[in-house]
Amino acid sequence: MTAAPHFDIDMDALWHDPYPQLARLRETAPVAFVPQLDGIVFTRRDDIDVWEKRVDVFSSEQPGGLMTRLMGKNMMRHDGAAHQTQRRAMQPAVSPRTVQRHWRAAFRTAAANILDSLAPRGVADLCTDYAMPLSGEALRLITGLDNVSAKQMDAHSQAMIDGISNYAGDADTEARCLAAVAALDLAIGDRLADFASSPPDPESAAGVSVIAVLQRAAASAAQIHANVKLVISGGQNEPRDAIAGAAWALLTHPDQLAALRDGHAGWDRAFEEYVRWMAPIGMSPRRIAGHAKIDGVTITPGGRAFFMFGAANRDPAHFADPDRFDIRRDTRKHIAFGAGPHFCAGAFAARALVADVALPMMFERLHGLRLDADRPAAFRGWAFRGPLSMHVRWDAAPAVVRGE
Image (spheres, rainbow, N blue to C red):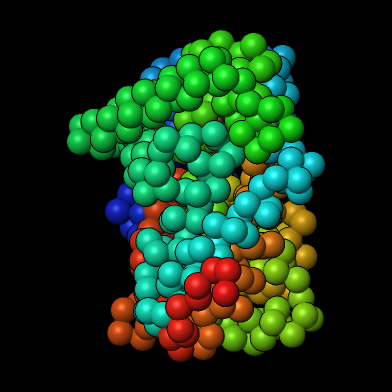
């Protein structure tokens, strides 16, 4: 009977750059109790791949967890049949068929509009001027919340993810999260009323939005509110950070960018490698519900655990030279979208938005795109990680007038 070794983490350093401390954990204490998180942390890819599926031991049911308390109990906080029922109800909104029939073309239109307005400027922060509004527009379409602006979508999403990763218990952070939740609940309620009085055509874009498909599946109002907020909390920051972050990675690796532009590699390779290398969602929390012995450590019910996807995706047991960004590597073992029954339902839509639309259209439209050497990018976060800013320049082009 061996208890998990204690491993102290510098939380400020973890926020600035989690990878050195995660590497030490993975090498010296892959199953460890971290007092600063008040939980057991898993950092090896194979451990996470196996045990994330064992919901009898590591349950997503977290009645007192931050997400449940602040945002409501969504499908991510259910296991078994309850989880699968809600997941199946939402699936028509994010299925490969729906992405192909509705969302991909709509994503292209949104990207073209944003790029047309940006191109004459010659300078921008890709985070706030391109990645954020494009991700927000995509979410407005997918959720059905056309009564929420792209800017509001991003602000609400950020406030929620800050709130649900607020393990330090900062009161201001929680208050911002609760304000965002309240605003979204009002907007969701308004759309539910609209769809109830005038149901959209099931074959239309509005008819395959998350709100519409959940309402048609007779989901409860509480389930609809909670699951729409879930989609927003992860569906904004992950593609937003992947768009801006992957652009930065490619601009700092010009040989790999050239391979993409020449057609020697597909843009999907850039997306998959980026989310492996800089996982936008770096961890997933669980409630310890059962007994297990993992890597010689005895696990007993009670307390919480954290599956560190960011550490797993840089595990040298599966990825050679894992700290290096390389679109040529085999990324099939990455678990940026999870590894078990809670695998991200929106993964296909995210791939379409980033790899099929955002990256290729940006590099095609913004000629001579380059980093602003005077304003370097800053990456932050560990539970959710991405660039805070990403200043770029390009050769400004005349404004495009649609219809000419």
